[in-house]
Amino acid sequence: MIKNVLEIIGEYFLFLKKVFTKPAKASEFFRKLVDEMNAMGVGSLLIVCIVAVCMGSVITTQTALQIESPWIPKWTLGFTVRTSVVMELCPTIITLLLVGNLGSRITSEIGSMRVTEQIDALEVMGINSASYLILPKIISALFVIPMLIIIAIFFALIGGYITVLITHVSSPYEFVDGLTSFFRMYDLVYVLTKTTIFAFILSSVSSFYGYRIEGGALELGKANVNGIVVSSFIILVLNLVITSIML
Image (cartoon, rainbow, N blue to C red; front, top):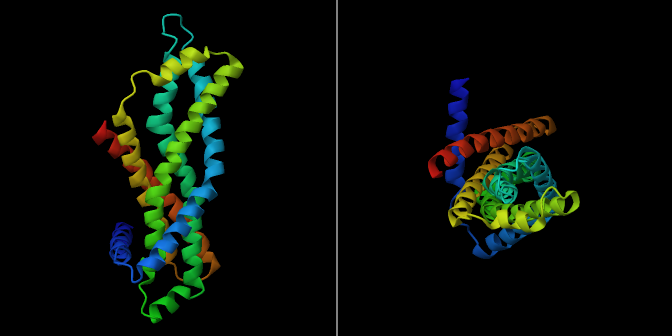
């Protein structure tokens, strides 16, 4: 089993070496890059916003139930919600959501081209298929996913504020006071660094499992599952490592 894991890791790095080569036609590369950014961003925006609002509402309600003591300052609710949403919930939970959404789409798209021998046709024409098909996806993910996380943070805080207005667990002024208290720009640096690394893992691992499949629809399904599981596992491990280093 260890041998198989090492072989897959070796294949992955050889795959990355093949992907990160200079595109043959810059105009074609930028066209595909824009198309991928549009598909990833627009296609995921609605579900990200809905999940973020629900997440902000839930964490606000749960936190309010835990800090009913009169000894705790009233702004603590907003501060705790902001810290939870910004530092962990949105960067990690939303990224794992995108693994299932974007990751499965990438694996299925690349895998389908492999099964239907379109990738073989590109290779016969002398085109570096890995760079041509996958590099735009990885670069797009590095731009789009951090933007989606920032949008998710905004909507999660909006969801918390709406919950305060409806349930009256705190006054809106005190909640907003907590949201703006003790804010550090380093927190955003931490979030963007973490999500950029997550974006690279999501896009590259999903592409790798789609690119390397052999067989038909059954193998495509297995590759899809493997891509999601492995990406999620690596992201959770890196989350621990990055947090330990940066914080």
